[in-house]
Image 1 (cartoon, rainbow, N blue to C red):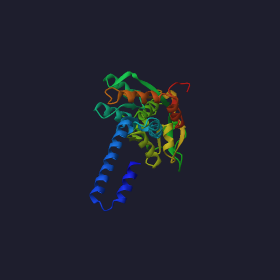
Image 2 (cartoon, rainbow, N blue to C red):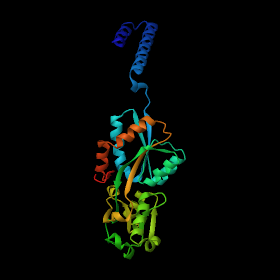
Image 3 (cartoon, one colour):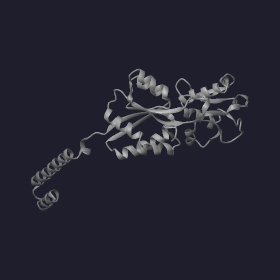
Length: 282
């Protein structure tokens, strides 16, 4: 209203150049004052969004992307920043001081090692999800193997696994092969991937005849299919722990996100992507 009054006056006084300049200047000054008052009253003008750094195992990619969207919609002051890699690589990043507030691991070993080093508080760490191993082969072409127990005797020339030192899926796969007395016969045929999605890519591209991945990874590629489910008694239970990192720059927000991950909404999203709840009955 004030601006329109000044504009009308300016238009009626076209012969008074200096008066016009003064009135425009006053109008701009009033606008700036009002903007400053609004910024002081509205936190969205002045409050910077909190960047929450989440380190997530590669096998969680699709689920965490959806979780990120849902959480930011309900918490507009939070900006979720996610780094994906193998759980072992993410553990190393945390140890080296990379920005990290919450760690979502595909293996318990990595989180336990961080606990021993004081980088995770056991009171802020919980098993979040479960998964299972499957034997995959290319969608097209010959089927080199039908049963996991027959892998060693099959015509599979290259078997893709995650690197056991840093990829929990590779560790579980090696345990399963040892548990069925096939590791010694197959180890010379193994092609390693730096994370479980690289294993999937090896098989999808035809660079490996078969591979061992999590069941949930199948949604990331239409170029592979399940040949067999790996017997669960041949490897340790696959649990995904979540943990708040000690020394987080935003401990309050990290704890809130950690608690939300254990709630119904987040769990329903995980289940939508094929994961099972942490409890054996889920």
